[in-house]
Length: 202
Image (cartoon, rainbow, N blue to C red; front, side, top):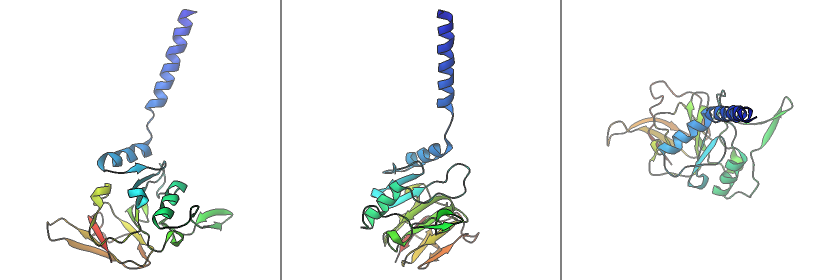
């Protein structure tokens, strides 16, 4: 009986150990970003927020190309930073009997204010999505969010003009592109792909 109990305990321990050892690639990626940055808080399975939601990074689920629509946690923060009522949520449209967000890039819509702009890790608005709403006259460095030299597409939902730079040469930055009001680019030119270091708005 004692031997049987020992075998049962060993089997249970081995099973538990196998479950713990099974990696979660999404969580590992999020933890890497948190370790490389300061002030970030994981607010959902897919999202990190900085400065109370003024900056949010969203990650695709494993096997998915694009980060999902902002979660309820992110939408609460988005409403708060833009002064919208509690309970404000992304509008949905019905397509083929399924409710989906109207935008193809998942950058927050005008329901949260008319000035959201997003940068994407991959072309076609894929990979990580990093989003802002506020005006930034001083440079905002992507390195603060582990996103330097990672931008391949972008979406500017609002009325701001956003200028993106590379800071390879000290005190002599190179302008890479300008994002005009209500515009987007699903794939930046190959000569500026993965070169963005910072941006300013006007």
